Length: 72
Image (cartoon, rainbow, N blue to C red; front, side, top):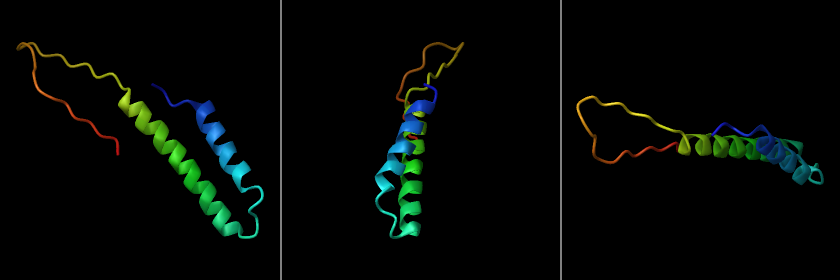
């Protein structure tokens, strides 16, 4: 599944909107926005990895076992 730009855009807008009334400490505000953006991007990447299609070819016969993948 490709990264959905609209979902990321909405997450970023939501982070900015949440900070609109918290301008007394600009540094902390920037930190919270950056954290929200990083979280949104990480979630999008993990979703993309978790929904990736893996195709394996083996001419020697069927392959058995368990494949474990982790994006975190």
